[in-house]
Length: 173
Image (cartoon, rainbow, N blue to C red; front, side, top):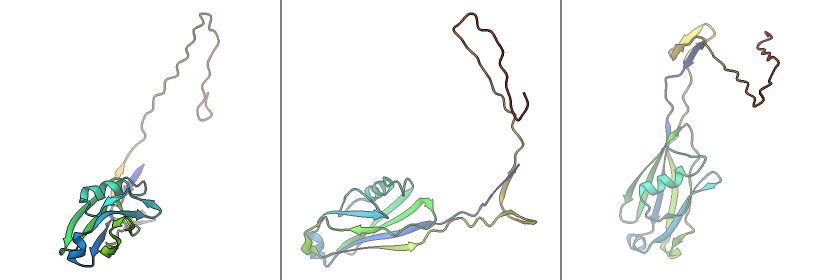
């Protein structure tokens, strides 16, 4: 058997999530929580100033995201925060996150929330290997058949066990 694989990696998606108050004064009064949505799944509520690790843990808890999320947090002037989210565990395109700010207080703080694609992920191109008579660069390994040993054990508590056992495999008995 010849097993081939593409050695060209895919690209992880990167998105930013931004919470931005209308002014520095408004930002000082902001509290409460926000929720991130990935498709139909929602994270647990996150503090308005959540640490990067808390955002990563919340996203990794979603079954459709899973492990391998890297997050960094940076200030946006004096009126907001931006989290950069890298879906490192899942290469390929990622749905755009949505931000629910209904838990942000006070509502008069006029917080604007957004999510944007910084880099859309791509799947590995799988452009290597053997296609007909054309051979492209790829990783490969030739493996031979592996000997298999099977054990059949017949046990009985009865002392007078008699008879025979017949085994068949591939039409051979």
